[in-house]
Image (cartoon, rainbow, N blue to C red; front, side):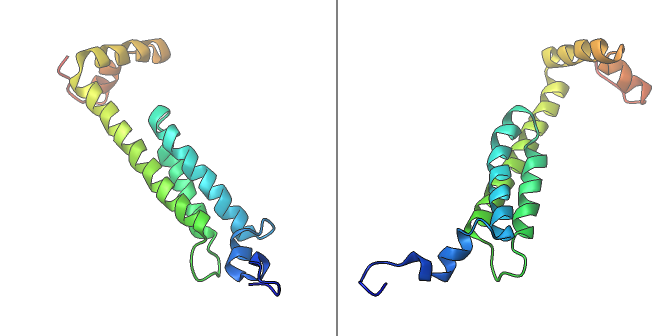
Length: 134
């Protein structure tokens, strides 16, 4: 409380730490939070959630520096980053499962592989010595 009874936020040390834009720890934690939030949709659509989520986690941990605990932005960045990594790996695992089990997805992959590489995906697997069912 201030001298006149009003709540004085500038006297609260924790408030000043988490909202000081000039402090590099706060900037790093804010960047980690943005990366963590971006990792969730990127995990669904581009399978890039693993990369952006991992970067968010690393930046959040680096933002701690010599502080005793993570800033609130960094804590949220870790949660969102982990969520982005999990979503990215889950979508990737589903894609692999679909290619292995669904003949339509396998045919589509073969067609795209022929357009890009000039050789179908099944032929590439055979060159590596991997047996295919098709």
